[in-house]
Amino acid sequence: MVSLSSRPLRIWHYLLVMFPPHFMVLSGVAKFYAVYLSLQVLAGNETVHITLPSLVGAFSIVLFSLLMRIYDEIKDAEADIRLGRAGDPRYKDRPIVTGAVTLDDLVVLRWVTTALLIVINAPLGGWPLIGFAVLFMVTWLSFKWFFWPEISSSLLLAFLTHNPITLFFGGYVVAVFAGDFGVNSVNVWALVLMLVFWAPLGAWETSRKIRAPEDETDYQTYSQVFGWKLAPFVPVAFIVLATTSIIFLSTQMDLGRALPFVVVVASLVPIYRCVAFRLSPSRKNANIQPFVEIYAVVMDMGLLAAIMVSFDLAPIQFAGL
Image (cartoon, rainbow, N blue to C red):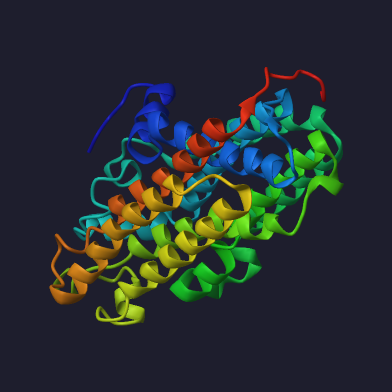
């Protein structure tokens, strides 16, 4: 058991383990601006802008990601503790299992995060506030299992009802953009952009719940649901969808050939890991998630870099609040 003397220390320890700030802040901000700046390019802007509302939006994406992590931690606490104490390698060292953080600590963190989100989004008004309200309601409903407890015992139902929430994250970014540039600036290519936003997270979600047959426990995995032979091809499907979408998007945005090339090369790494697991289902080869995470970061950072190279960036505009 781990014992930390004060709540702030326990919460900080929890964040370092379950939501490492150095990575999650960077990835959240990069994902927001990959979508936000892309929407400007797709609208025909020759110069891209970073506005004060967009800074609020980027920070909100990070906070919403943290809130979803806390929601999952609270609603799954009983099952996670049971799995961890049974020796499940993915759960035995989690802070909620070791006692490094308590449920009361997580409830406090939940309310602090919620308050921050409301305080920074309320002044935005208009489309951004509508987007925030919708996303907040959807994430809160996920915390309640959408009032359908059966979802908690079905991996596929959980995926079908929870993973599309990512699209509402993308919708929030579109709402912030609409507040800055007008709703008429949003066109049909935003739908392709939503696939680029969502598909890597679908790959991440499915890749992290694949195990070798000898490592299976009471914890439900995709390798149990689909069988270990088929399961690794589920994240592959999402990776192919994301890569294809960004190739079409890059062509529409006239970003050149470098971005598609880099993304295709990056996609081959997690795909190789999935194939390796199919050929040899071991604990080592089942560790696909980190390679999917790298691929997702390459997509977001690559898209941002391509836009920054191809278009001028205007100074931060403080109009809009």
